[in-house]
Length: 236
Image (cartoon, rainbow, N blue to C red):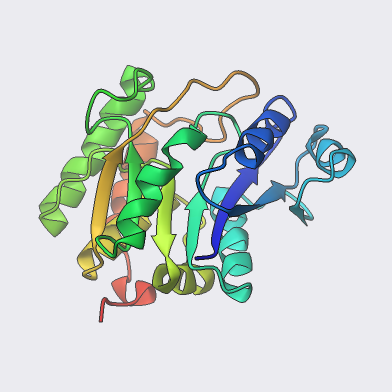
């Protein structure tokens, strides 16, 4: 199977080389990678070029949704079977890639989310304010879909070929993970959440601002309530 890791990166000069090197050293699967440089204003692009790292350069900062969708378009046009989101900030652990991939390989799931909260694998669970926000979104998705998803905002995800095609055509620019998770659940895709290790970032700053604020939560919940599910296909 052809497997691609998509690494969105915005001003990740402190982390990107170490992140890519860990992927290169991963031996359990033969995996390709692509870094999406989302208009970084620091030395990220210089480091990518000088270290001969595979990357796509966006002309200016388009945001996490557009950045990740660029990776999905790359996966679609290059006929990949599985695509994995993997943050460029060093928070995701490459050693848990197999846990994400296996349910898809075994056709037990169409999408697999790496979770900090489903078990005690990860000691790092983010701030209390962020956890409160995650719980609010999780509750809303449970009320609307009947399915409990604990780590609704996790950017550590693997999807199959069918969903790659869907995301290449339609992917939200704002709040992409909770929105697409909800859409896929509602549309009948097989969903699995697995425990993974996550780490606190060692440099740079998060692209997610005001995560625990009422403003953020209101917009995420409103986006879910107003979502056009037809954009995200239906399970055959």
